Amino acid sequence: MTLSTLFPRCLMLTVTPEQKERARRIATGRQRGKHLAAASTSIGSPQANYDACYHGTLAEIAVYDYLEAQGLNPKYILLSRCAVTEADFTLDGIRYEIKCSPPGKGFLHISERQHHDPRRLCDFYILVVFDTPDCLHVCPPVPHADVSGWKRMDNRHEPYYSIARADLLLPARASPLQSADPQSIGTFLSTLFGGYDTNPDLRLEIRPAFPKWLEKTQYPDGNAPHDWQFRTGKRRWFSITREGIEAAARYVLDCQGRYEMYCGVLPRNRPSGKAADVSATRWLWCDVDGGETGVRGATDLLHAAQIQGLLVPTLTVVSGNGLHLYWQLDETIDLLDEQARNRFKALLQRLCLHIGGKTPSPHADSSRADVASILRIPGTLNRKSETDPRPVTLQPPPLTIPRRLLWWRSFLPPLPARPAPRYNTNPMPQDISAGLIRFAQRPSLEGNRHNDLTKAAAWFIRDLKLAPAIALQLLEMKAQASPGTQPITTDELRSIIKWA
Image (cartoon, rainbow, N blue to C red; front, side):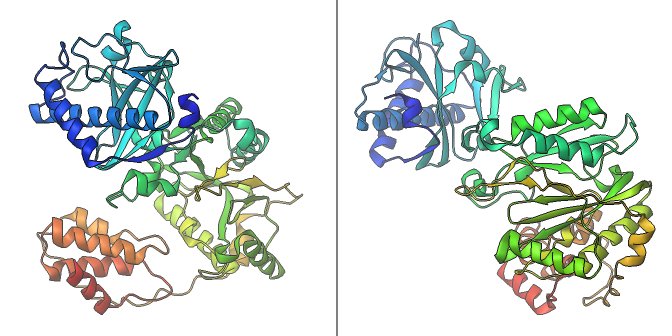
C-alpha cells in the first residue's frame, strides 16, 4: 500500500490528549537540544519557535500513528539524538518529509534552504493543515519537484516557498480531458471578445475562485472575508488579440481542475475589475437563476419572456443551476464615463425586469446587471457542491441577427420609480470618516442583506466602539442602498444593534 492510496484526497484526523502530551514533551526536548544536534530554522521569538516545533511534532505523531494503525511500518527519526541528515521517514524505500500549517495560519511554508539541502532530500512531502488545535487535514503526497513551483518569498526571513492552505485543501487536480471541454472554452471566449477592435489596452480578465464549500475548512471560525473565494492569486489578464484569447483559453483549461472559472463579461482597460475600468460593450446579458427548479425552471422563465417578444439569445450557457444569456449588439457601444456606464447598467436592469421572477423561484439576478460583472466560463465545472460538481455547458448557438442598442431601449420596460427614503437622512457627525460612509453606501448582494447588516453591526459596535445611535445611522444608510422585495424596518435594525 502506498501513501497515494491512503491519501487520495485530504484526510481529516483528530488528535488525542495523549498525542498532544507526547508532542509537548518532544518539542520541549527538541528546543533544549536533546533530540537534535542542529537547531531548527528560527522564525521569530522563542515562543513562536516552540509553537512551530510543537505543531510540527504533533503532525508527525498523528501521521505516524495513523500509518501504524493501517498496518504499515514507517521508518522514522522522530526521537533521533543525531543531527537530521535524512527525510522524516521512509516507507517501501520512498522518502517523505512532513510539513505543517499551524492553526490560524493561511499559508504553509517550506524553507528554500531545507528544500534544496541534499541531506534532507525527499521524494514526497506530506503536508498537514491544522483546522483547530485538535483537528488536522493530511493532504495527498506532493512531489518534491512541485514545491519549487510555489510562490517564493524572502521578506524578513530566509527565503521560503509558500502556498495558500486553501490550495492544499482543494481536491486533487482533475485531468482536463475528464472535466473540461476545450472547444467550448475557446468558442465562448472568441465569440465574446472577438468583435472588439484590437486595442492593445483592452484586456480579457480570467478570475478563478475557490469552491464555496471550502469556506468552513479554510475559515473554521466563520470570519471569512466577503471576497475570500477570489483570493486565489490566480487572477490573470490577457490581450483580446487572437493570440491573447488562445492563451486565456489555455489558462482556463489549466486552472479548471481545481477552481471555479469566471471571466469578466466586458474587456478591461487595465489589470483591474472595477466598473471604471470598462470602456466598451458589444453585449447585453442576464443571469437567470433556476432557484428550486434548476435549469428547467430558468428555461421556462426564458420561454415565457420570449413569448412577450424577447429575442433568442446569441449565446446560452447552462451554468449548473440556471442560464447565462447573452445578446450581441450590432455595434460597439462606448462606455467612456460614469454616466454612460450607469445608463447601460439601467438597461441591464430593465432586461432583468422583463425576464422577471422572484427568489426562491426562477428569477433574473439583478446583482449581475453591472458592467463589471463576471460570469462562468462554459467548458468548466460548477463546484458549488463538493459532492455534485455540474458541467457548465455552451448550447449550440442559433442563427440570430444582432439588434441596435436603440431597439433594446425602446423594447424593454422602464424601471419603476425609486421609492422615497425610508430612513433618517440626517447628516453624519463630522468625526465619522468618509471611508465608513462609503462602506455604508455600498449595496449588499441580493439575498445577503441581513447577513451583511449583522456583520456590519458587530464591526461598528464591537470593534470600532461606535455609539449605538451612530451605528444605527450607518446601518440605515446600508439598508437604504440595498433595496429588496421586503423593506428592512428601523426596528429590525435596532434589534441588530442590540444583538451586537
